[in-house]
Image (tube, rainbow, N blue to C red; front, side, top):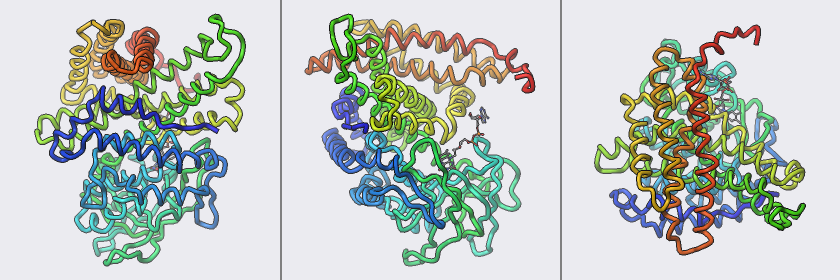
Length: 581
Ligand SMILES: Cc1cc2nc3c(=O)[nH]c(=O)nc-3n(C[C@H](O)[C@H](O)[C@H](O)COP(=O)(O)OP(=O)(O)OC[C@H]3O[C@@H](n4cnc5c(N)ncnc54)[C@H](O)[C@@H]3O)c2cc1C
């Protein structure tokens, strides 16, 4: 079984020494949120998660969810753990205090998400989508809807879903068919089928609130004709008590490659009663409130699995004796190839943690800073970073899960060690909330072009400014500047070629996203190396500086090959007919 210990020293280093999380307290909304308060809460969350939730990970995977006569049974222990989790305040950590939340920084909730996803990523989906559903109703719901649903969604007492996908409508939501017909009393009757709906049916909470994408009878075709509706599993009486069962039923659950403890349901809406959230035909914009935050959350799932894979691989490599190494050592950590794998894992997860937490801080600043210009700049960063966090952290979870199995050798392939579960759990992260291919297109087609290219320009300028002084971290500053130059050149090439041949952009998008992410990680490693240079703990300092060295010499240069790929026109490849493929 994989074991999990929260990497508290790493987390505190990133929050305090690299990102200065204490700066959030300069905003009136968080005036009382000191670094000590944040640190204390992270430590508390770690205790609960390590002791109560991590032990359910392997048994939950083995047992899975069961569907019986319209009801879904989650794995043993999940219901009690969920109750403990929401009642301890962790679901509502950053939710609005007016609706049962604690009003703490979003950044803190992302740190807790990382811990929870390392411990048990399948379990983490229950609170995760609940917070997304809360945010979507908060942003566009009427006062009545907020009063009815948010107090219990805000604490996690009720759970939430996001209902978009249908058999013919996956990445392309324009094809959504579920119909919403007005009843004449302000409510709507929803009819249609949704597939792959996470947490769509269970009995861990007394109510489930579905946030549904559907089409009005007279709406225009395509995405412009979609609206959003809130559809509760149980109708809610005027006094807030639970009313009649609404006809939204689970007709099946999926049998999946991983995340077995999370129920993935097919839901049938048989004239289920719902209420429109926001204006007619603004469904896609309303859904994006939830989707943007959910994309960052999925990135945290990836980060959590990267950490789990890395810490288990390191522990195993320190223990497993096999062969004699050139340096005379007898454990596999002494073999250069094993060290290569472990350093790749360390460099990736520690660098990605800075990207993910920094994105959390930008979300906080974009919502709460008193100066509109600062809020606008922070929002630019959130826009740019979201596809990077989602795609890079989740692709890395698959890569690092695979490396962990490799470090374990044949033992990694055997269930009892638990690292094969990481590989299986990780793959879905690259697929839902917009596949990673779609994330890459978002970066290339939208984010590079947004506000006349202002967004990437900000990033390039910031990295350049940080990497100008060579000492004492010249070993990474110089290759970072070179990689940045190549990335900028490639971004300019894409911005131009997109106008004349969009297939080039489509072909290069995934490589570009990885190149962009590696430059971002280079920027992070530069900042970590600077912060670690005078660290009091010599072992920690040595580990950080050596991993920075590895990243600079082994991972950052990959940017040049990726950029060369991107700049190779794809027109000839697109001319190949599908029949002869
Ligand atoms: C376990 C699980 C849980 C899920 N949870 C939810 C949930 O809670 N709510 C919900 O609504 N949905 C959920 N989904 C659905 C998920 O979001 C979709 O599966 C995903 O959006 C991809 O859609 P698809 O499977 O139809 O793939 P397709 O859209 O058919 O994509 C297939 C391939 O084509 C590529 N592709 C498609 N269109 C383009 C394009 N325009 N440009 C470039 N490449 C393209 C994709 O990147 C992918 O590689 C879940 C799915 C699973 C498996």
